[in-house]
Image (cartoon, rainbow, N blue to C red; front, side, top):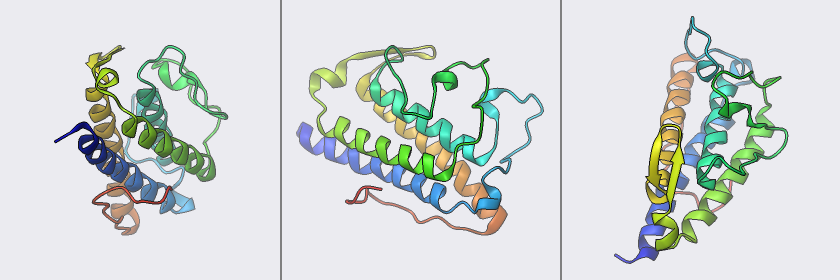
Length: 177
């Protein structure tokens, strides 16, 4: 297969993962927005298990990993860089569904553009993070797995708490979120 075919395949699967996260975001009832997904007695920042925070965390890292480096990365307002500081403060407030839907739409567009414009040279670029170093191509797959992991947590929570079954997306929807 040529690179154009691989880019299309990767986008269709990554886009489907983002589209499923969109379902989890859209379908969350207001009364569960601040609900805890699980108990965490240590209360470490990363494990703050409120629904909105899992969505925010997923989008923040989706955006950052699409950039390929922490240096120079700045999320759009009202979001800040505090997500990168494991021991730092939590966001000052819970982000709204509308704010996170807008961030999701931006990330989806960025993801599609990044993948479809990917060159062999860019795919081989090395990306360094605290957890290790990988090529940008591998970082894309790592990023997709991260989105899928958290979408599955949210989906399971909605299914258990209110019986909502989110639609499965086989490939990315043609229309933007």
